[in-house]
Length: 151
Image 1 (cartoon, one colour):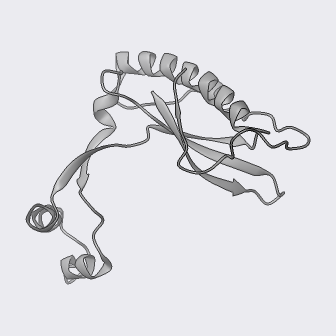
Image 2 (cartoon, helix red, strand yellow):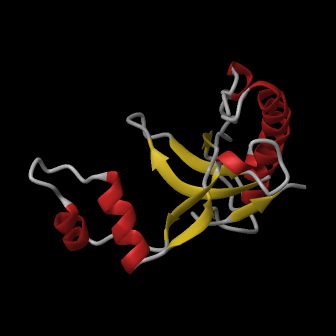
């Protein structure tokens, strides 16, 4: 299991949060449900407009045929869970929080795999990390796209 920082956001109270997406790796329970076939690139607005029917809807068959003919498909890992962490003081603090969450997610995935092909988080996974009163600069800046691997 691994995690990637998706974005940073601020709520109405001015508190900063970091969105981290969690991904499963091949061989882990439930992986096949989150390793999906997607177009090799996004369709442009012009391409999407060309697929619209008279009622403005796009038929699944037309969409599939267009992608096969013009773009092609690829297999891609998609996030099975995302979590908003209160902005920690350093990237190392965030990494510690992510590692703790990975342990909980792994246990929950193993339990889910016994009864379902879809991840269903439990309430225990919801608490946010605690922010430091004052932010200090760590050795690395917290940036979207930073990949955090399991320890």
